[in-house]
Image (cartoon, rainbow, N blue to C red; front, top):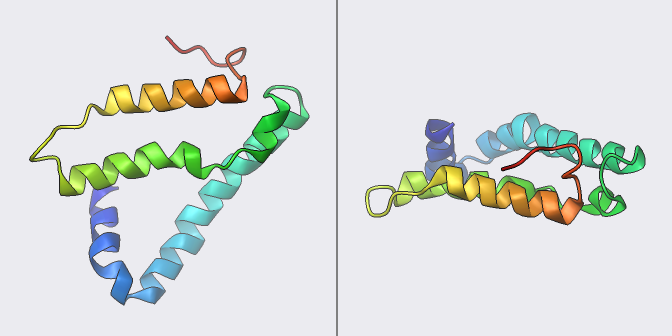
Length: 105
């Protein structure tokens, strides 16, 4: 994942076809799947109603940030990925009121 992201950051601005391909075949389908899961979960009562309108980029942001951090700053300051992800997911779980179906410590 990091190698692909590194290439996208380095060459993406000059290679629109590369960015278009990656966005259409990787990013968009995954974001759509996450959004559909949230909408279905809200519709079925598994998540709170506000999950249907939740911006899935907020769920993806910690992972993108961690990848970029590792590419650019890991040699200066090590990122505690486990803490970052657990805090981000815990916040999302609280916001979406889905604790009843997820067990987080």
